[in-house]
Structure formats: structure tokens, C-alpha cells
Amino acid sequence: MNTLAAYTTVCLLITLDARLIPDNYSKERRALLDEETFTAVGGKLHLNEDETIVNDILMKWKMKELNPSYTNPQHFNFSKHYFSYKNDIENSKVYQIIRRMPKGAVLHVHSSLMLHPDVLVKLTYEKHLYACFADDDLRFYFSEATPDRPCLSKWALVSDLRKSSGDPVAFDSQLKNYFTLYKEDGEDYNFVDINTVWQRFNKVYYTIKSLIAYRPAREKYWTETLKQFYKDNVMYIEVRTGLQDLYELDGSRHDKKYLVEVYKNVTAKFIKKHPDFIGVKLIVTKHRALSIEHVLEALNLTRRLKAEMPDMIAGFDLVGQEDIGRPLTDFLPILSEAKDEINFYLHAGETAWLGTSADENLVDAILLGSKRIGHGYALTKHPSLMSAVMKKDIALEVNVISNVVLSLVHDVRNHPLASYIALGLPVVLSSDDPGAWSAEPVSHDFFVAFMGVASKHADLRLLKQLALNSITYSALEDESKTRLFEVFNKRWDTFVRDVISDECLLDTSVS
Ligand SMILES: *[C@@H]1O[C@H](CO)[C@@H](O)[C@H](O)[C@H]1NC(C)=O
Ligand SMILES: *[C@@H]1O[C@H](CO)[C@@H](O)[C@H](O)[C@H]1NC(C)=O
Ligand SMILES: *[C@@H]1O[C@H](CO)[C@@H](O)[C@H](O)[C@H]1NC(C)=O
Ligand SMILES: *[C@@H]1O[C@H](CO)[C@@H](O)[C@H](O)[C@H]1NC(C)=O
Ligand SMILES: [Zn+2]
Image 1 (cartoon, rainbow, N blue to C red):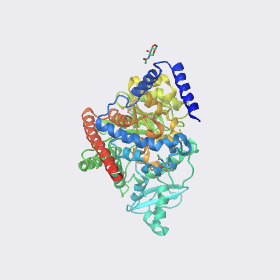
Image 2 (cartoon, rainbow, N blue to C red):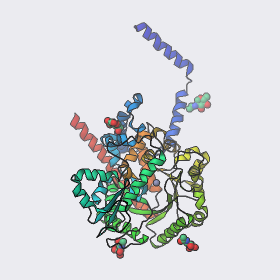
Image 3 (cartoon, helix red, strand yellow):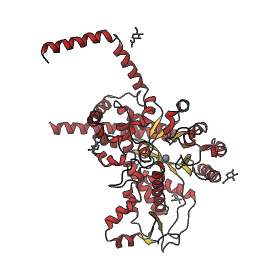
Image 4 (tube, rainbow, N blue to C red):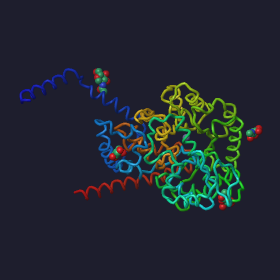
């Protein structure tokens, strides 16, 4: 282009600008966008000087890692299955910042599926452990002699099987496959339908459950789980548990209260070593496919345990695949009767369907006074329910990676969390069953939500508000909540200082 042509083009643009764009258009445009930023989760937070520096560092890396995808979307990891990029996550600078960030509390996790499969494999080195491999399934039992219980093949000591395999490493990696849906070089999970993936998920659950029903194994399991969550900067956990009966080596069984005591004692021991860990509360669960009688029994149990150990019991929930389980309306009489005595934290709307009973569980969760809603994935499709959630300040426990692995959403840019954040709904992030997909306790979920779901512009304020929400919407008593806020603030300041000083080191080493 010659200079004259260039000159003319520029002039033309200027005149066009002047003619078509009203004086205050850009002001109005800015005002609309600012209003949305202000409304969104974290939009009202004010960052201090140091936090602003951290935010600049965070956003610099975020843009560096995301920008190439806007023009080459085929490289955008978060529109693929979590398993396809899981092992690359730790290389991300954004992730490294998120990993060290204090998360506050984790409020939606299931007791048997919290621990990484590598640690579960270590638990199989415990003495007296028998295994029954049959029909692509695996069950464990601890016993002095060969277990006198049904097995489609035959019970064998794990130590013997490992030895006779001739290749303990291969044996262990085979074992690990029974503990998680994630397989190295595994099949493409992208288009596995929801029922199939839930069947595999349930298999993993029953295998692990059989391993940790033995009292000493359960104590180790819980200690290791606390270690991992603490390392991931989680300071308090609410655990959903069906409270299975534990047994001893001689086959004697404990009652359900005993497991609550195990949680309490093991956690107390952990807190002795790590005084800034606040603790654990349990949400008692029952499977939603069971009878009304069974659920009533569980409600009675919850009531009794809450009376005996009030600091340990947060409330009650129904679990299991919602699409094929009983709707909440089946249990309405007994749930209504219990709702003034027991706090509910109900799973609802964990479905991709619209207008089904799983979808409409959202209505009942709200009417039954659920304190928080587990998933609430279908909520965006219900404007009236959404305003009820807002008005009643019911927190949504969102588990993005779980929704991908359990086949509700395939490209997380389409996850409803984006709308919940934009509307400023009371959202908390959690991880549901991180062990079942070999994820970190909750950092992977924060990372995927921040990079894959939230706006390009979402920054440190979103991350901080999500962590703060997890404390605000926890079942902690006022005093403990205040302590958790104190611990959080202290750790947050350290986090901010550390990110800044690391970046300074990086700068000087480069120059
Ligand atoms: C822009 O101009 C219109 C018409 O004069 C006025 O109503 C509106 O308030 C202005 N908007 C801003 C953001 O100043
Ligand atoms: C995305 O995945 C590729 C490899 O599959 C990896 O090189 C890259 O670092 C990943 N990016 C993020 C942000 O995780
Ligand atoms: C828990 O600790 C208390 C007090 O030390 C003890 O009496 C109780 O037997 C313990 N219970 C379990 C299940 O470990
Ligand atoms: C539950 O408790 C109620 C009231 O105490 C009692 O009537 C009922 O029989 C109990 N049901 C079960 C299944 O435990
Ligand atoms: Zn769940």
C-alpha cells in the first residue's frame, strides 16, 4: 500500500468512527461490562497492593497459557477429556500458583473416594490381606485365616499373589486399575455414556470400600487422606459417608458410631501435629435407590449420632446416580418430618436431562430447606429456582471434573458454573471423588474452573472469593468459622508474599 492510500484509509476510519459511534458509546459499553464484573463472584473484592502484584503475575501466566488457544482451539485442553491432559497440569505456572493458594474448606467429597490410588496400593501391603479376583471385579478382606466368605474364584493372600506374579511392579499397577477410572494409556473416555461410566465408578467404589472396612486400614486411610488434603492447602473438610461397619482381624464388627469416633480421634491426632488444621464434619448418606425404610433408618441414625457427637455431624444427604435413583419426592414424608432437626445437604440436579425427576429434585431440595445443593448442575435451566437459590442463599457445591468424568459435560466451556459465577451465586468448588480419577484433592478442580470455565478476565478475586465462600457456607459453628477465617487470612498473606518473592527470584535469575 502506498502512503497516500494508507493515509486515506486512516482518514476514512476516523470519519466513520466519528459518524457512527455516538459520543458516549464506549462509556456505555464499559458501564455494562463493569456491571457484569461487579456482579460476578469475587467482583466486589478489593485487592490490596501486594495482592494486585500477585494478580498481575497470575494473569500474565494465564494469558500466556490461554492466548494460543483462542486462535488454535484444537490445542485447548479443557475442551477435551480431563484424562487427556491431567498429567500435564503440573507444568502450568497458573496451576503452580493455584496449588499453593489456601483453599479454605472442601465441602463435597465422598469418604471412600478421596484418596489417590497410589496410596491405596500402599495400603495393600498391610499384613493379613486377602483378595478375591473374579469377573473383572476385586474384593478384599483382612483375616488371620482364609476368609470364610463368598468368592466366585478363590481367596488368596495379596502378598502371595504379588510374590508369585514374578513382577510386583506390574502387579501393583494392575491393582491400581481397580482403584481408579483413570488408566495410563487408557481408552478414550470421551464418549462413554453416563450409565456405563457410573457402573465402572461403582465398581471402583466397592473395591475400595472392601479394603478400608478393616479398622486399622481405615485409620491409615484417613490419616493419609488428611495429609494429602492438608498438603493441597485445605484446612477443613465436610465428608459424605454412609458409615460402614468396621471389623477387626478376628471378624468382630463395630457399630456405626465407632467409625465416627475413628474420624474424630484420627483427625484430633492429625491436628496435634498440624494445629492450623480446623477439623472434619460428616454428612451421613444413604443410597437413593434404597427403600424408604432404609432411608428412615439412616435419618434416625443421623439424629442419634448428632445428639451424641454434635460437633462431628453436619447433616444428611442421599447419594448415587440421580437419573436412575429414586426422586426426592419418594422420601418426602420422612424428609419433611426430619428437616427441623437435621440439616440437609442434598445432591440435586446432577443430570443433563431437563424435566426429569432428577432435574426436578432441585425443587424439592429447595423446598426441604437444603443448606447447600450438591452439584445443582441443571439449575441454569430453571429461572425461578435460580432466584430461590439466590434469595435463600443456598450454596451450590460445584464439581467440574466430576461432571466431565461422570459424563455430564464434555467441553467445560459449556459448564453451567460459568453462569453461576456471572450471576454471583453462592458457589463453592469441590472435587466429589478425586481419588476415583487420580486427581489432586481440590487444586485440579480450581485450575480447570479458572482456566476452562471462568471468563478470560476472571482473576485472583474469583479464586479468593471461592475460597472464602467455602468457609462462609460450611457447617462450622461461629467460633470455629472465625478461627478458620483467621487461619485462612494468615495463610493467604504468606501465599501472597511467597508468590511475589518467587517471581522476583525468577526475574533476577533471568536478567
Ligand atoms: C449516553 O447518552 C444517553 C443519551 O444522551 C444518556 O441517556 C446516557 O445516560 C449516556 N450514558 C452514559 C454512560 O453516560
Ligand atoms: C495442554 O496439553 C499439552 C499437551 O497435551 C501441554 O503441552 C500443555 O502444557 C497443556 N496446557 C495446559 C494449560 O495444561
Ligand atoms: C477415641 O478416643 C477416645 C479417647 O481417647 C477413646 O476413649 C475411644 O475409645 C477412641 N475411639 C476409637 C474408635 O478410636
Ligand atoms: C425411626 O424413628 C422413629 C421415631 O423414633 C420410629 O418410630 C421408627 O420406628 C424408626 N424407624 C427405623 C427404621 O429405625
Ligand atoms: Zn457427590
